Length: 265
Length: 317
Image (tube, rainbow over all chains, first blue to last red; front, side, top):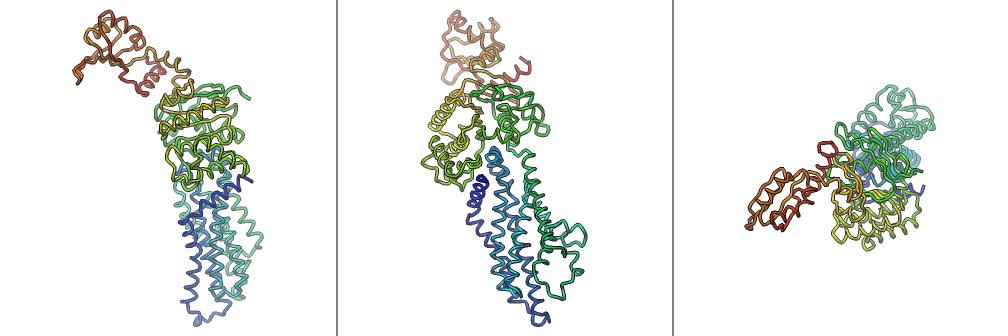
């Protein structure tokens, strides 16, 4: 535990650079700016929508902007290059020659990625929701913040796994996977979308927010979200996260990451 | 517990089709050893096999009686200083050494005390609170050594630790390592510079092309090289007479006399029996009345030495 706390604090200190802080602000500002523009420029008076329907529309929009896109982007920037950066700057070997050093490195960086991305997203939500026309502001804010934390834990594990398996092109593989699986397949009306993080997050959203009566019919969204309990969705996310992290840990234990090959040949 | 520090049995490491280490077998008892070889000889591969970062394609590696791969217990007894830098530039030397100590399970305060102690030992007390980005190459080498010895390992494995150090830094680092050896700890130090290792230990492992070519003390290696082919340059008063005498005695396979810019003449001798030639040269020069003013090996580079050893190893000599 002492080792884990040490590496978490160390990595947190390293990530607090002006450059990284600027990106943190960008991630936080992203949902705020879009929501503010939507509130300002979209004319709902002629749409004939009821206030709770408009609120529902904003809730969905902020969900896609914050826990979905911003949080995903945040952990992509921090978790995906975990192995690649250590190998590129040759610092890997120092940690690899410590007892359980690589395990602590991965867990420490994982937790830092979750902290970094979820804090930025939560800040974004806390500013965006009051600016929006969301109907039950406080409840929605709590639900979206909860989703951000779930999103950060799950996506950080996913990107860490991809970054560990394909460290040479971690970012490329993460972006391709996100586009193909989490954005395309997750919207695909088939069983396969149930294996995605997006599907589980959407299902949690459906559980945690109040849906206007005219939309609250499972047959309407049965292919893009599940009407099963929130606990079950959380268990799914937990299981996916555990699998992703286990693959990452197993990968660094089994594979040979060293610069000797390049320097010797 | 094994009586051996290292045991390698027919270890081969392949990178695809390229051989990093080739059929390497040795047993070493605890002590200090210099791993000597030219660049690309396989030193770093061998060290990575010893610290468990690489898995041998064939054969077995045991360090302090244990398989080093993913061996948490063994990692506590190993200190490693790689040949490349790999230090976080924004971090201070103290933070870095402390973190690596904490990864050994040491609590924050004792880790800080020990990190300061080690950084002082390597002469970094004045700069340990500065970011590593501001360190010179030599300062980084010292910081790397500090992190390697901080957890008091039984075996210290160093890859080119003197690289980038100025003469004063080399002398100081040598003193630190001598103290380390003096305390009864074991050391494996890899270098391609002979005198760096000679200053620390008399036990050498000579490797080239991924093979162990020779091992032993400096005198044992010298004995091995006693009658190896080499080229010798001799400055003397009558080079033609000396060349003739050497050919007559069948000590030279070819001789060339060349004019020097300074006006003198220099004799280039190629021989298959350098040791015999050197031991008989005083007698021959006296007999033909030649006074020798200078005599050096024309191919005294380490690579030439290793090429000779490689030929002996292959049975070509």
